[in-house]
Image (cartoon, rainbow, N blue to C red; front, side, top):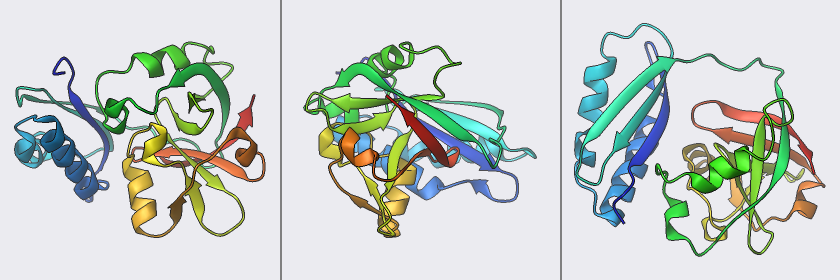
Length: 208
């Protein structure tokens, strides 16, 4: 299985550099080692070369091919409004918890693209996917976080069939989040957030 690339989507801030770069590079290196992709060790140097003279916030996309080829593209980063609330819908498309590639951020995105296509942009800012057991997994470009009032956010386990998101990893390491299997019924008892390393946490309303 080498007909895909590994992906890291990051935010660059002038004077700060790439937000959560250590976690992004750790995930890329770990994924590359497990899948047998060479070249991950060269990613930090390539990023530094591309970003050394940048003076604006950027969305940075890095891909690593099965042959170890690294490609980096950038675009201006426009933050969401502070009071932004996303409308999230539930996908009919299901993820298979037994699919090992769901744990890696790759260019194989057919399931996520199909889920996103179920709703026009005017009806959904993000689409939430479940697995074959009706367990909550993740959004098409975000991880899910549930505030159930306990003081610690809940996030679905990787074994449900989802990506080890960088923001998710940071929150778990900081003990701001804890892993718990979740269903749609669980989401009704608290506040739902979606988030990723590029944009942080985003408040949401869940519409079934």
